Image 1: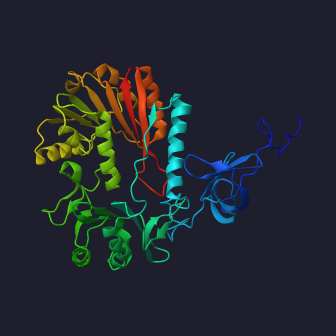
Image 2 (image 1 turned 90 degrees about the horizontal axis):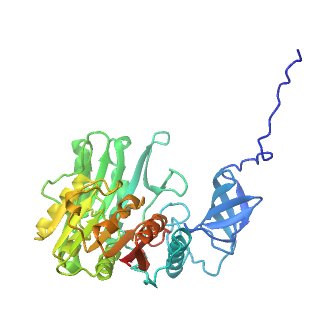
Image 3 (image 1 turned 45 degrees about the horizontal axis):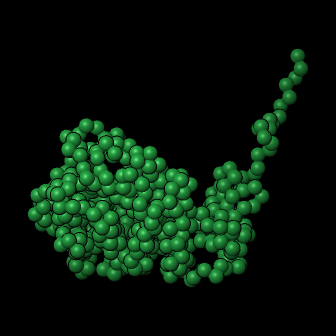
Length: 450
């Protein structure tokens, strides 16, 4: 019997496997164009490079963040030849903090990028273009963010508390002393927060901090162990100095230290006050949120005698303004606590023509009691996964008009295919610039039955 040959390496079909590119390697690249997420795209030796912080036409030095197959993810370390569009990054933490990925682009170019992203998805996936494009809904490019989560982590090796935002492409924490996109009332809290947290006796038990600015300023601390009386005094003194509520999140749900305190935000054009609690979803951009609600009502054109359906209603952000204009609003949400909160918001604003229901909207609409009478119009504002199962049954509800608010153009385009199949026409669409300095795209689309 022949002796087996050892040490053979069998080649996979298709030829030899290319060596993987190590993390941290630097590479000089020429950027061909921008990807849908705002990163630059370059091609080198059969690989496609996605380079954060790079613009089309630039020659850059990029550092590898990760590689898989023929795709390399990297970030710009140096610009040898800059695009005419490039501007100095307004934030001192640009390139390290993972929050604002396109701030090297002027704001009007950011809007144009987002518009192209939406148009491309609708064209490529759904094969449609709206009969009319709406102008972008936008507001100030800085000082807009009324809510933020601050990362907190104890480095046992260095015996140091890290406080800031997550780094681009990693779980590292970038120390932040100023954030240009935060609303002004949160700026001094953000700058003084690290020093205050470092005074607490058990920094290793701290989770994260959330900052809120609405009808009140609030600071929420997530903690994994009980706080000492001294620590609580430090936190209360800090919040008192900044005229902010203190909320604590240990076991169970977040709770205010003062049980009489509540959070909320005002929808000024409709004179509505909506209460919320930390953990509830609220739009972080108050100005664009109000403009979005106003545009949704304008496009939906609700009439006084109509019955309107609001799907994924949340706290009632759309449902309550709608209720001021129609005979009845039926609002449906998947999270039971949000349904209860929305109903409370309707009652506190003296709106009694609203009904709120809990339903799993990732599943097809069943013969629910609230759906049997049909609707003249529908508004939906789903999460990133979209609303495919819901839109499959919308025509059966009899709605002639539909406004779809989307935080993901890809799922909006996918759902558009189904709506067109049911006989709806895409009348109007446009972007909502809810997150300036990022490539995140929100959009609104109006569909009408043929």
